[in-house]
Length: 79
Figure (cartoon, rainbow, N blue to C red):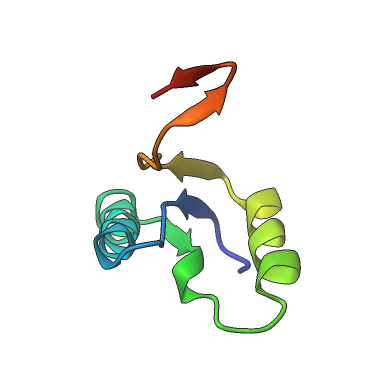
């Protein structure tokens, strides 16, 4: 990507999570005119190394969405 873009980090474990990430990317473009990079669109074998990490480095902004994944237990439970 040579233009400015915002990196959108959103879970892709479920279809609703993927849909949310796509919606955020579309909203970024429609409200700001700046492109968005959503990793769900990466389809090649070098996805993590050459595309996602490069996109993180080159992005002018970053949006992250955290999804509940359960209980973490280290000593005591954290929900």
